[in-house]
Length: 120
Image (tube, rainbow, N blue to C red):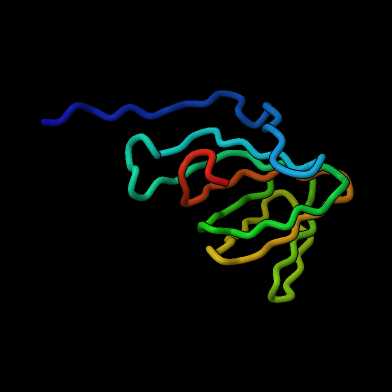
């Protein structure tokens, strides 16, 4: 019989501002990754925050899902879709998509991406 595999707990992770990703106003930080347990198909999860200022244009090289948890975003893709995203909205950004994020104040999203830790 194999030993039990413990869960991991990251208390109050939403309350920590992620590190700067791009421009002066785009922040992203991985909270957890399965990379150490599954190097072939890792997934990483964390928070993305955008503050008013420069839009972030992001080319996805991996699949990602995001739920908006605070604030709001205006999210557009190269196919011409545009959504005003608010808390509770869920998005799937397929590998190969090019997404533009803007906000009038700030937005905070929780993401899960099919990529290695710090691979954004």
